[in-house]
Image 1 (cartoon, one colour):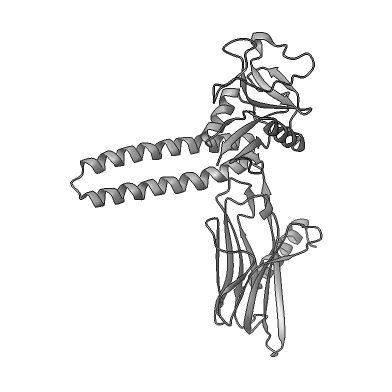
Image 2: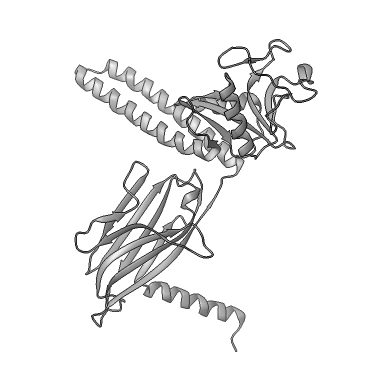
Length: 351
């Protein structure tokens, strides 16, 4: 008589045997990733040809994707054929995407896409399809599917990544300073010195731009481009002080938002209202220096537009920071975020 454990073992062996016998595999690494923080997502079709293969001659490998898992509707990503061994499709090589493929009718064929810092749009079902000739000499095909799951990082994970990135950037800056000093002291030609400095600076710039961009999209929702800048609204609650929110904005080259025109005021109001994640959204104004005199810290200019909510401002010296409600009205509020509030902040970052 079979026990429950015995049946489980048999089922597991059947699954493993099926996997080992499968000539076409859809491989995803990692199968579960953190949106915006995972360094890369690899999706590949692997076709292993042997005497038991479905196809004796492989003509093409194709990779498809569907964001829906319940009723998948697949769109074509890339295809490689045996005639010219070139990869075709709707995805191209770029600084954030790597594509590779090869067909070998005597061994293993593969088709691969690697995305750096994958976003939410990479979550879904991937389908690999192989087309060719079967042992009877007739056209045939086989396919396999696999699921890529993604989740947004928890607040503490984002903060930890932010701190590590800050430390790394500071170390790179220190290394650059040390390298510059060493170059000055080295007995080299001027041309060689210039090459060393330029190479290191390029590495720092490449690291900063790619990593900062990925982290920025993991933390914020961007607006469209407005007069050479974008507004970036936090995509979840962070329980910081306003000074730490300012540091976040400054780290990405910006500052807490400053409203300087009617047009900018209307754009920001619509943007906050359409992203109804929070009850309160902090911007850059403060009256810390003088009660009732509201200034922007970044530009050190007076706040021009003060459309207060009813009864505001009412906090006196205990509430010195400026924030918007969803109705587009302003309040003076404490400069610390509290866990019982749905609170976000808005950065303004030039491009």
